[in-house]
Each structure stands twice: as C-alpha cells, then as structure tokens.
Length: 305
Image: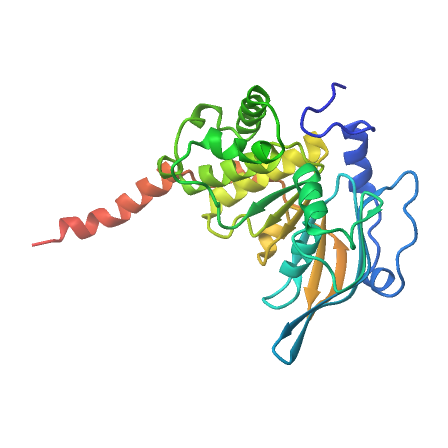
C-alpha cells in the first residue's frame, strides 16, 4: 500500500479501518466512572480524557460546562458527539481542539498530556495535528479558494511552492480542483464547505474536528459532505470527531457519544450505519428538485387572469 500523503500511518490504513469497525465500544459506565486504563499496543487512543472538568465564572455564578468526563477515541475512529444546547459538547470540542483548557482533569493527545500547555504551545499543536471544520465556512471573501486553503500553511511557515502544492492536493481531494481560482461568492454553500474541509486538511492532520458541518446545508449537500468525511476516515485513516444535533447525520459515524448537563450519558456503536455512497443515488439532484418545483408551479401560472 502506498503511503497516504495526507496522513501517513504506521499501520496499513485498511487494517486500521477494519479494526476500528470491529472494536468493541466501552460502555458509558466504564468511561465515566474510573479513569480509563492505558491503551494497549494494538488499540492506541489518540484522544484520552481523564476526569475532565470545565467551569466558567459569570460574575458570582459558576457554570459547570463539563463534569468529570473520561473517554477514549482511537486512531481511525469516526465519532459523532450529540447533545442539546448547553450539554457541553461545544466546550468538549474546544478543549479537544486545543482552543481552551480544562479547569481540572487530564487531556492526553497521542499519549502526551497537553492540559498544562501554554497558549503558544496549544496553537502549535493545533496547527500540526488538528484540522477544524465549522458550521460557518469562515472563508475570506476577497481571496480565491486556493488562497483560503493555503492560509494554515502560511502560519506553519511552509515554502510558497509547498503551500500551493498542498492546497491544490486538498482541493482535489474534496472534488474542487477546477474551482481553485473561484472566490467564495462564486461557489455554492456545499462548495464553500468543501473548501473549508480542504483548508482543514492542508497541514495533513491526524485528527479532524467538525462542529455542525452540515448545519447550513440542504439534505443532499449534507450527505455529500458526509461522503467526504467517510472517505477521509476509511481511505486515509483520519480520525474524525463530529458534533451534530441531527440523528440522521450521526448515523454516518461509527460511534455516538451523547452528552447532557456536562456529562457523557451514552457511548454506543452505531447500529444501522448509513453510508453516503449508498444514500446519494436515492436523493434527487438540485436540477431534479428545480424541475419538480416548476411542474408544481405551472398550474398556478395557467390560472392567472
């Protein structure tokens, strides 16, 4: 097997993907009670939390966003994090993405505890190991898709030639090689989200964190985005952690963690998993939907006086 240019893993990707599919999922009780034991040499946790708490102070009021969360996410997993507003899922993602620090507890990223890292250390770690995709595309309106994707490589200090090479590779990976010179205003919502995904991949992270990536998209485009995530996970061995409040979107993951009141209440393997490559052929295209809308509207046009 050739080495993956985005995420070169030590073990073959196919073997890791198969192991991830068959790996038994720990129960919420086992995760939330005692701190998880050390990862075995076979199953390596790339993310491990032990008794994680996050408290915010609003004046004299304490807000407990996370309450003693312990969990493990392994290399090559695809995990959906679910929960209503205020459940703690966004706070969890901020900590996993090194955007925030826990009040207490331990966060191990690839077996290195990062809980006590400085802001500068966290920023460097974030730039090297983690790719972010958000509900808002956060693209610079006056720059091309290529330049938007290149931006993280500028902060990484890569040479100009390498920046463009990686950006074009990432755009090709999400099916936008022919849109590299287009500006965001010239792209559909789904295409803009693809650019955002390409930007998340350009520094070749081992982990992609996606926060409500389909929240602003229609049904078909949402499935197209999930198809990209599934291919990144299966074909390239990238670990994907996705926050969503939509159960149908969570069904594209391999595992679901459900949060409520700052605690993980459920951690289960997905049953009846959906595969975007199988769902897409069953959905109408935009052209078909527009044609149907025109047919439905035509009787009304004929009745006008």
